[in-house]
Image 1 (cartoon, helix red, strand yellow):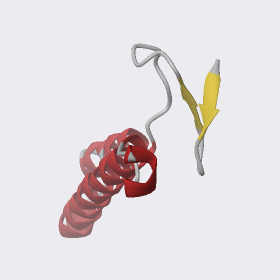
Image 2 (spheres, rainbow, N blue to C red):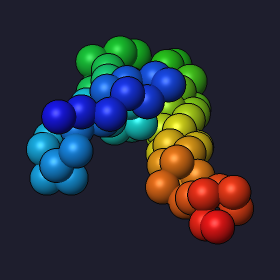
Image 3 (spheres, rainbow, N blue to C red):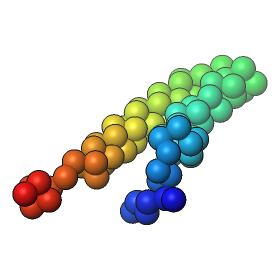
Length: 81
């Protein structure tokens, strides 16, 4: 059985693998790093900047996801009784 979240379906079993959007963003930071080996040296700093930007975006996305998960798990005051 699954629960419906605003952005994706969350399985009831916490050990079931699922797609993590922040992980996709963070993993995409490897693309500019790999391109640095192929591109001329003029592109070194723009590729480093892009990789760092993607890493920061992934980290921020992870933090937002964790905060949203905590607010969903915590019962509201009306539910507590």
